[in-house]
Amino acid sequence: MATHECDICIIGGGISAALLAQKLAELRPGVSIIVVEAGARLFDFENRTARRQRMLEYGENAWPGDAIADQSADGIISRTMAVGGSAMHWGGVTNRFSAEDLRLKSQYGVAVDWPLEWDDLEAHYCEAERRIGVGGDPSPLPADRMSQPYPMPPMPLSWNLLQLKAWAERSGIPFWGTPQAKNTIPYDGRAVCQRCNTCEICPTGARYSPDFTFKQLLAAKKIALHDNVLVRRLIPSDTGGRSPRIVAAQAVHRERPEQAVEYRARTFVLASGYAWSPHLLLLSSSARFPNGLANQSGLVGRYMTGHSFISAQIELDAEIYPGMNEQHSLISRQFFRCPTDQPYVRHDFRIWESAAGRQPRLRTDEGKLLMGDALLADWRTRTRRGAARVRMYSDVHPDESSMLTLSPAQKNRFGDPLPKITHVLDAATRARAAATETHIRALFARLAQHSNGRVMSVTKGEYLDHPAGGCRMGTDPATSVCDSFGRTHDHANLFVVGSPTLPTGGCTNGTLTFAALTLRSAPAIARA
Ligand SMILES: Cc1cc2nc3c(=O)[nH]c(=O)nc-3n(C[C@H](O)[C@H](O)[C@H](O)COP(=O)(O)OP(=O)(O)OC[C@H]3O[C@@H](n4cnc5c(N)ncnc54)[C@H](O)[C@@H]3O)c2cc1C
Ligand code: SF4
Image (cartoon, rainbow, N blue to C red; front, side):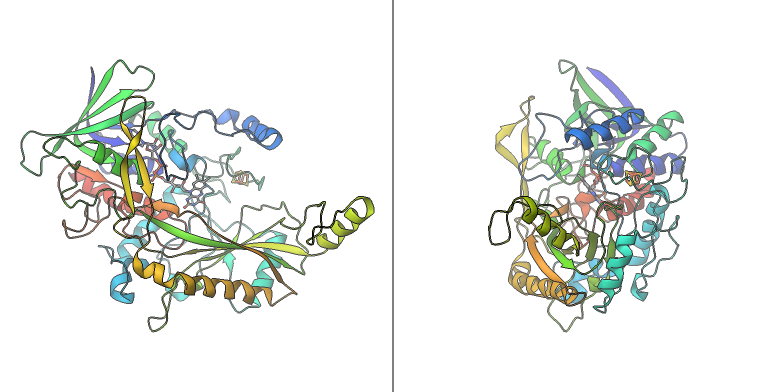
């Protein structure tokens, strides 16, 4: 068996792990940190222009080798397992949650309050924005006050977004550019965005991805990174009764499966994302801990959360030329707040340029076949108007039975059961679902009242986006898995960071919040 010793063992190598390792190395110079990542190290930045080209020409996966064939789960929305995690692919949209997300119970009587104060989280949003590199327009709404400005100027709005902003604001709702982790000036040794429109794979490095942080840490010899190593279980000490310390993480190198690997550390941190963090705790069950580790509350794998979404395509009188930096968008945070004497509904509001309805087609809306001049005439008529894609993420709350469990049927090649996730919304969310949808459809119609607009289609999302939960934080060990710093109530040297710790999933992109919470955990982990 290969045994590795360190002060801090971080399990998982996504964005949460990268930012945590960076901050720990600053807080405790000389501390030994090993990051253990199940997937491969895709550090070939020099190949990204060619990969992007093949993606555009042939529709190929721009990230070959970023998933593990036998490591998947029912109910997950991204299979990425590689150094950098899902944030190798991400769009880099870095919206903050709002103060209301932390006080849902006391302010609105729904879900739970988070065990920390907004000002505390807000300071860590600033830190995450600085470390990642975010450019943005500050929100004009007083409730969105930022204690520090964005570290980079905003991405300029394209012609299309300027047309759409003028149109949308006629409905009385303010819109501004969405903040993004994309360089608008040279930042942290990376280039400026060229608006080439393929942020799924960024050929310039303008869009932040965690591989940049890992490469910096490795070059400075601040961490060791063990890729292709899957941690299979955590081992508690024989002493310590019901609350033992964790003494080891047992793993396997995926390319040398015959050789077991063990990590011994003073502190262990689960940075394996919303699915694999609770999964590893459940997988670490034993005769002494039949429900898995950190699970005296029985809540590991429960309250799996995220947000619902509804989208629309709206046609309007405007000159929109699809393909101008179409990944950039407008946002309004006006509906992050909800008057407490009105039915509860909270959501963000985003607008993108759209090519919907602008492509040539072979049949009319009525199904009549179009050929030759008729096809061209129909196309010309439809390209005289522009289109907008509009989407709202709405705040929904998980039921306790919103669960990640160990699948009785599916196992990986080492014989370990894989996770199975079933999202269930709580009774209050289900009861207000129809009113929420009516409210959102009315906003689509309110936009469409202007510029001769017409709602072409409305689509309801069929999954929860920016998934989180499974190890929710709280002050009471009976109703939560960890405290607000991610320290598990049951094991003093075991932490969970980022997405799994969220009690509720907010109503906008979650990754900046996962990052801010992780950075907030760092001093407690450094001291542990
Ligand atoms: C296409 C796409 C676009 C997105 N765009 C946005 C966006 O614009 N804005 C936004 O806010 N969010 C976006 N997201 C979501 C965002 O990417 C994720 O929220 C974020 O990357 C999660 O980071 P994480 O560190 O929590 O987890 P992950 O990225 O999942 O990292 C966890 C890592 O742990 C490893 N791991 C798991 N189990 C083990 C184990 N047992 N042993 C060793 N290693 C293990 C995994 O292989 C993985 O690499 C997007 C996601 C996708 C897929
Ligand atoms: S638009 Fe900017 S951030 Fe997106 S891929 Fe191109 S250079 Fe990168």
